Image (cartoon, rainbow, N blue to C red; front, side, top):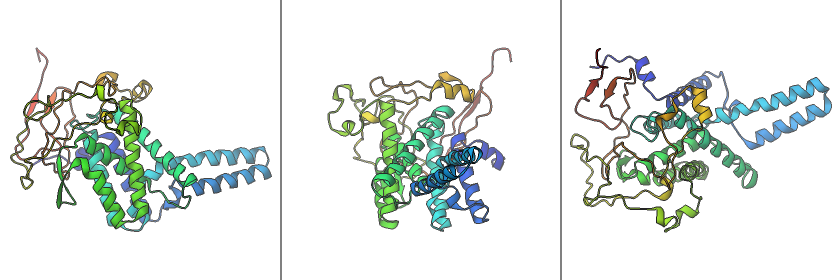
Length: 363
């Protein structure tokens, strides 16, 4: 039995996921206790327009000190660009259980993306940069939609970023099998599509639109990382000369580990399932800028910026086609000490993991 405390478990959560999960939970509790109200945290174009108009009237009717105070107050509203991501849809619609589910799913998918076995391999600056880029895209797209198409649409940014994270996760593990709603076995590749139709069926067009904006934001991030043109990279044959097959004679990707998942749930039959190749925009890796590494005092040699045209040498085995993934498992990562190696995996089940200790000669 593990003697790991709750504090240790929280510390083992990757930093970006930990911060957003904990702050979202705190906001939910503060709202329940009537300490804050959702309207104080939302990012909504009509609200900004009203605030701007009020500021303009104050400036026209005040002296210099009053005008400066009004401008500072207007600029201070920029905090909403961050806090809007801390409001789950269930909190806004007075459905606490839905809020809990949204927080749980965000934690699950973001945790894996940021973990040692995920896309960012526990690289804090790169994952933080991903969050900043996609979060900015989400806010801009929602404001543009309000300004051009429907100013009355109320955007739920937490749902948008959740859909974005889910989309990126599904593209990273597109050939893995999951149970949608615990019932329907599907490939991870199709999870965003299933989520879209589920949102449309259960929550209506507004929720469907928010999810679509989140998915499109994730797609634009992939365009940045692959250095390819949006929309054009969706056409068959685009950048064809850069696409090469990377399967061996057994139908597996070269470099993949043929893991034995005999101890996992075998209720899903994987025979005959076609392997889904990476698209051109799945390739590459977007490294955070050097200034962010320096700001965080983080070593800069842990990742490399690549594009679809300069493939990243991947030494970490991917999950093979047909592998059944239990997305309800938690990541347990021991990150204490540079001489420790661990066999813990976000997907691991069954046998106890191997742990080894390395020491310098003479110790």
